[in-house]
Length: 374
Image 1 (cartoon, rainbow, N blue to C red):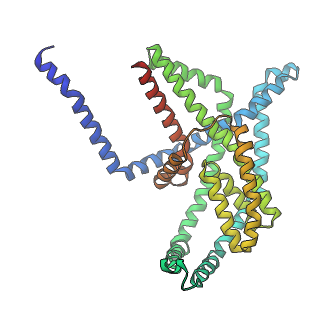
Image 2: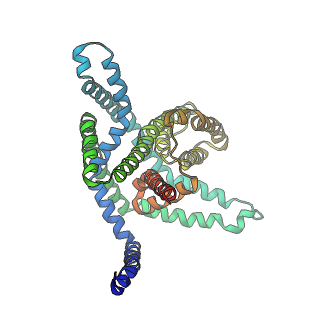
């Protein structure tokens, strides 16, 4: 290599790094616009995402039923075990959806309306309590009553005005759009479960076509298996544990005659998808709302069985369902949920943990591979 070629070769990596840094800087400089584009793309392909979610969640029960149908010994049933198992699962799922729509959802919607109507009275209760704090109380120096009054006024003005009514109307429209997308997702998941072998074969052939090197192929397969394991753990296992949490918490609240029991149980089940933080936030929210509706003694009474169940779930139920942990630290969970929620809202909060786990595992695998190759 002559001197001029050598100089160009030496400066090329520096030039490439500079371009990459400029791209990263401009990306962060326009992060809001990028998040809007990504959010719009996720909204467009949401039926496919729902389909993947349902397929992961329904895979285990369909596999169990398929093995049972094969053991029947009947030729007609054994040959069509996969299709019959998927058909059975979807019939049961439709029955559950109908039950939720006819029985549970009206109760949840009425609880939401009642809670929204009572928010102003709850705000007045908290404001009066803070105002009655003794003058020599340590909290008096922080002017909690004034700060809460300012915050609550802004909250009420934001959610209880004409704009809020328009937002509510758009929310109702989006709700029915979401129902349609969920139904499309169920149809997509049906075909994904029926054609799963063909889907796996397609990605295997695509991997072989993209990577001619055998080591690159094996590493790609390893990464994809890790992604699949994380998604399966998060969607199927965590989903089943969340349903158990929802049923258990709702039952506890009904036993203690706590208002909004079905709504609070649903919130608990959804928040359970956030490791470490979700269950804690749900318990705190339930206790605060119980104090407002039933007093401190009632909140303590319901707090004890909630904490006992959380211990039972964390130490016995969840480990046996999930088998493999997501292996992500609480600090990383907090950071991921904060960033995901800030830029992508509720969906970002729920997707933040599995996405962060996948990125973390791939990075760790890449670093371990490079360390071993040195």
